[in-house]
Length: 235
Image 1 (spheres, one colour):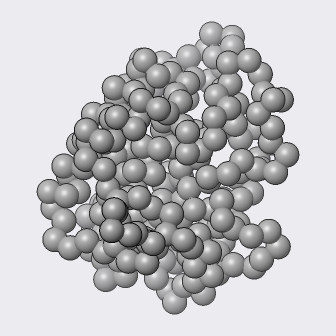
Image 2: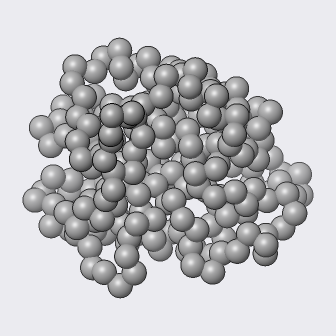
């Protein structure tokens, strides 16, 4: 199915699939008041507005709704064995989903208005987007071989502005916002500085997933489209 969709949309340089990258706001729920949902909905509306028919509809991968979560951890209600197997299978596909050259990645790099780290319960990961291990990994995946206009920093959206496809893309890619791709060894070194809620299990997992995605995407790339990213000689 994905191959058919890719063939249909390849001439436009994108698939009708978006993956969301964002920091969970609490330990048990990523968006308890729907603040991030409202921001994402605003971006999705813009992407489907005045886009010259490039994408008539858009499927969104949102980890909380797309992967089986533990139903009620505080009361000991966890995933079933079948659900846990599907969850692990889904985790194994994340590198391809975020790094694919034709998927969109929507990055919520800022907290919603009113969210304060000091108000969160003990044990909550309160690190900002760029200091989170999973967010850093997703951003790094999106920076491999994907064109710049397919990795959007929604933290750069301006309040009160009516967006369409072009204006959202312009605002959310301003100042580049992407680093050059990192070799797996360099990525692993940077990852040691990042924060995880479950670092013991997640850190070695994302190292393996990043290396696999790196080899997958650069192993099949025939051209690299790195334009207007603000890179200098060092990059």
